Length: 279
Image 1 (tube, rainbow, N blue to C red):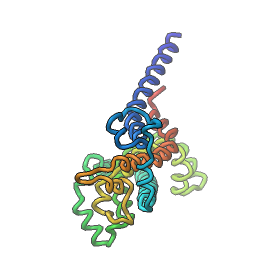
Image 2: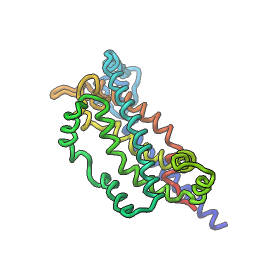
Image 3: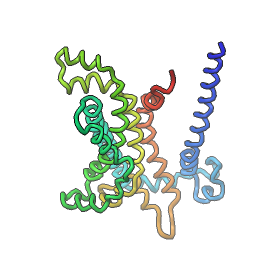
Image 4: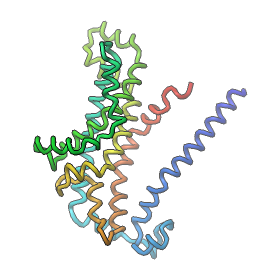
């Protein structure tokens, strides 16, 4: 009985912490959205106040959506983010499977080498990356961004997925081999379904830095046809005058796709983070 009460107490405390953390995390998002529907004067005079009949104004959304550029920026961000996440999950899972399943000389060193990207920021190699993209004629293309973000996300993906794949039962994989399954079929049919929570975790942690990144779009794809939504929102920020209505509206519209992707991965994400934490 005491153990049950203790478990319920821990669950209630964990729920309270989760609610508080959610409120803190969502506060700047909510503040951005409510101010995007207000006039410029209301934004500065009463930033915490929700839009009222006297302060409600859609000028920011009208400015952002009046031209066709924003739709291009949004599509570029979606394509780059989705393709990069898919490649990170595919190649990261394959590398993690090889490192966790097969024992060979240098296995540990190779795993450490692949995980170095977690500690060494990829931005340190910006000049070399730019020179390489120029040599391959990939500047001002979405391909350049996809390649960079894939390389950026692989170290974390390999580090997380390899740990989860070590927990997959060897008996299950050996049974598949006895039934005549190839290593590829064992990987795709048996292993991947069991590590979906970990893959969702990797997808979320990979998605946010890609979507919000300003550095590499500015360096590798600054043209009007390849700008991402984060870089495109900078057109409303001037040296002396900033169109805050348009900036807040653009940021509010940029939040929506991220929330949709997060909702897709959220259930598996929670399972992946809490796997093994509760016995």
